[in-house]
Length: 140
Image (spheres, rainbow, N blue to C red):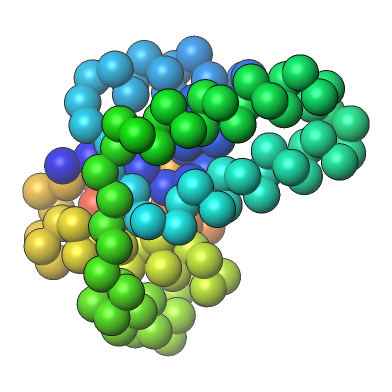
């Protein structure tokens, strides 16, 4: 299983320096992510549009790309088990709440056996925590 944090999914819908490599990686297997990743990705798109980094046409394209991507990924939807793990993670790692929920969802998806699974992320702090939890990190 390869779990994708929202930080690694944004470059799949908006052109960034890492987009090409992450798009290639996405072709290699199923994407598993937290059910609220689409909210985080939408936030990133809208933030860029407000800041002028995305034109109205590129904003629409990014939202369309997100809708297509969302239709293809597998979502971890169980709130209670994810929340439980996220609370533990907040006590152990210096994470923001949304990042703890992402990592909690990854642990649920991994069946509490992270050493057998990959974690795709571009956020340094979250990558560090995921690595300490036992996930194999991509990109390294």
